[in-house]
Image (tube, rainbow, N blue to C red):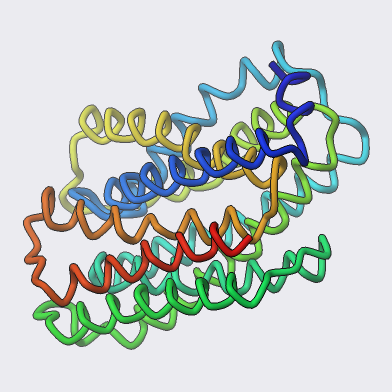
Length: 300
């Protein structure tokens, strides 16, 4: 499978596969975000998710895929630091603000800086039409965040802090998207990067979550929490793994922008699962996000 995947790099078939992977990542990332923000404390949810995918990835990293080349260890170390910073900031943002406000701000900040980073790191150029698509998508995402902000009835006292944390989290999203693309292109076998990434990435948050759980006055039962973690771990493999493979097969900037249609699916989750109200204005903003993604794809 590795040889087949590598053979598609830079081809039209590779572009189409990358498109499909980016859209799949968008759907699954919205589900992933809802799992972390849902019933449990976001720190506990993230810890349960990370330990699940770390344990599941370990046999593949140690016994199935080829071992990383020597130069990859430094890349993994930097990746580890970036992702820990991202997860801590995201958990802090979710702890302080409503999901429907925080999530669009995080996802709206990410693609713009990813496109800029991809230009400097990989020499990728967007056409004028694609920049119009980026602007359209960002207008929809930030418009959705502002609409949700106007109608927010809870967490208003912590909202300024939550928004600041959301912007910082979005910057780390851009950083890890760009650097992960660099990392997965730096090894001969992309599945080596994926397996070792998930194993290493599952180390820190479970420790933080365990300490937090131990210090709680009312501790949630571990069995349903770990079940949520297992489901989230499986989703993470396909969500983060898909976007990483997409950035190896095709342009990093395009994959990053298409992934941010996750805001559309997050709004649907908020409506169908979290029972949040979706009116005509929100529907129009969601359509704007989808239109922006279409313009980016067609403009390329």
